[in-house]
Length: 196
Image (cartoon, rainbow, N blue to C red; front, side, top):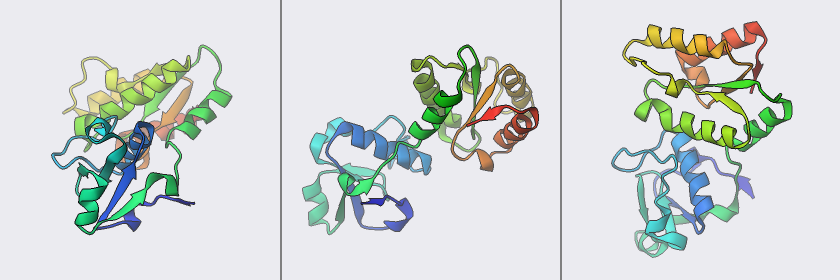
């Protein structure tokens, strides 16, 4: 089995997911690669699996969904989810955090916001939910009150103030392309925070 690399499957390919958890993993991967449904709606926690259930095929190059029979008739190659090795992008990071986390400490979530649909809040909120379910205290910058997102400098001041009350920094994919998250990472490095 091989790892799925999105860029290797251009044009007439679809991914068949016969169970909802597989659809969720695949759609979250599409989200992390800045793909959206055809109408611009996010894939994050939005697999639309119930539309076709075990017959769900994702046309990840166009943002459509359909059944295998339709795509066969249209000349598409149908990839099977089970033919690839899949790791939820965050499972290993969360496990790494759990291995060093000290009870009562706080974790700051850092990642890109500018240029993402809804400022990437759905991903920030999803990670916060997953961490808090494991008993981890979280500071989520997507939930800092009274943020005027058009005033980047003011947002950064509030975010950094909150980050300084934490002990760990949990980096989301794409942080290195974000000016704000890069500043947070550098400051966390300089101050000796545990960075996951």
